[in-house]
Length: 94
Image (tube, rainbow, N blue to C red; front, side):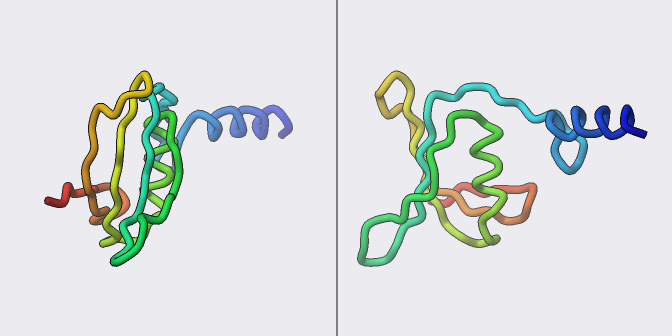
């Protein structure tokens, strides 16, 4: 029984709930903020891999608009506004 638990623990460390492999590929740095009307944007997190970014976005409610700023080698290389439509789908806004 112990061997099965060890095997299951190793599997869940490298897989998400749907069984897909979790990739910790470096993306530079992604800063995620939620815009606030009439105030500074609310900081959410800094993600250093796609998996970290996916976890942050997956925890948001559907319909929440968030801003993403990609930085590579200390330079801003991209940005955008997005809205999670469901747990599996995110839509670019504007």
